[in-house]
Image 1 (cartoon, one colour):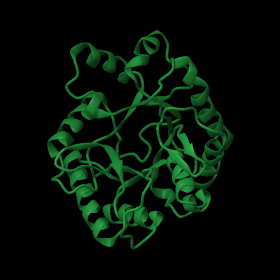
Image 2 (spheres, rainbow, N blue to C red):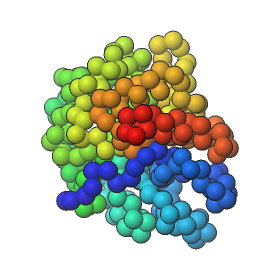
Image 3 (cartoon, one colour):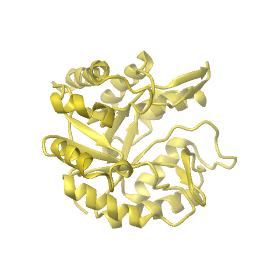
Image 4 (cartoon, rainbow, N blue to C red):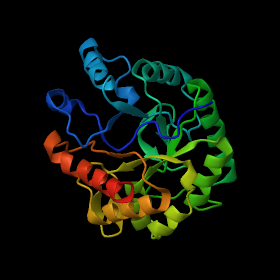
Length: 277
């Protein structure tokens, strides 16, 4: 199971159909790669598939899953994984990542729910990650997820749980900096200390995004706002801590014109140049 640790480089943007017309006119110089949710492109219409191909022939891509439910109890959706592998092979995509969460129970729940931080949950999730890696024929990356309520039974903290899963599954870490910040506010911990506890050698890919502040101590991970200053500061610290890694700007709601997102992608690129000229 050999693959490059860094399948893309630089600063990226999540690909949205809203932006295809603008991207076909010109891709801003600061965008080095794109990310897609494979569920949104598997079985798409012929014209959309051709438009995706035109971009994937020129730029690197990452697949970031939405519905695999790595912590769920239903059987892993291996049919979906086989379709993802076909999509990745067709477009030369080298990295697939998924959330360290669960999102199904006799059907799709359309929300990312926290996995209990227990030894039993580690073993269960690790087995499913290994199964996913076997189907895809490569390591996957798991993303630290935002959550708002902790499971009633916990035997370890979040960082210990993530480390246990990474080590036992022998997978990569997809580090979402905004999720670290959101959880640090919602659960009252130091985000920098949390980052120090994560294994830098496992990190292959990073996310930046905006969130919604519902209360002073309750942030909602919406991906629908601009990135705020404390999250930019945390990205700066993260680059110091784990090195400069491929980093993508997520914008999933309240999607503005492409030109309005360019300054945030440029800010990622600027921070990357600061530590890796």
